[in-house]
Amino acid sequence: MGRICLFQNLERDRAKKDCGKVEVLIKTKRGIFMKNKIKYVALLMFIIIFSGCSMTGQTDNPPAADGQQNTTSTGEKKEQTEKSESEQKNKGVAAPTFTLKDMNGNEVALADLQGKKVYLKFWASWCHFCTQGMPDLAELVDQDNDFEIYTIVAPGYNREYSEEEFKTWYEQQGYSENIKVLFDQDGTTMRAYGISGYPTNAFIGSDGILVSKLPGSAPNEDIKERMGKIQ
Image (cartoon, rainbow, N blue to C red; front, side, top):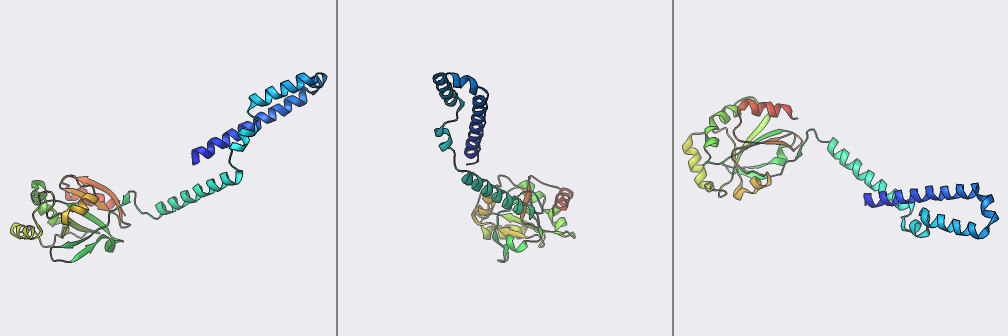
């Protein structure tokens, strides 16, 4: 609607200007036109037709009130959008919400972590680079961080073990018990986050905004640096 209203307003302004030119021309040349009434009428009709100052052009334009109403509505929407953006602490998009269970059956909801920064690592048991980075992840978890750390696997999705098979495999690896593993049944959360490879790191601000994603293995220093830059 913005383009249509703007275009019609331009046509209306152009018509008013042309009509003003006609009026000035009439006043200036009145003495000449009065000498020959027939030529005056013919010339006036010619100018009116080609100046665009016609009833058809005027009636096609919407009332001024309608145009003002549309402008106000657009302004209100812009104000609401700016207000919503001003409430965000970080630049990005809203992180897809999830409620997943850990290996002990406890539910973890992203909504419950509001007010905290969250680092997510999406991975799989068959991914060599993922398992290779588990010792570093255990070291990161044991540090005093100002953000929460969760890892997410998807049992039964993309060649991953079933939930029970994964638990058995995980215990055999001897990984740290402090690493929090969440089960994303059938990969629903994986798809919501657009995960196309493992491992993939996701950085979420305390306002629930997904600031960035980083595919591939990431050193602890890089993870902490990224998390330190968001609020």
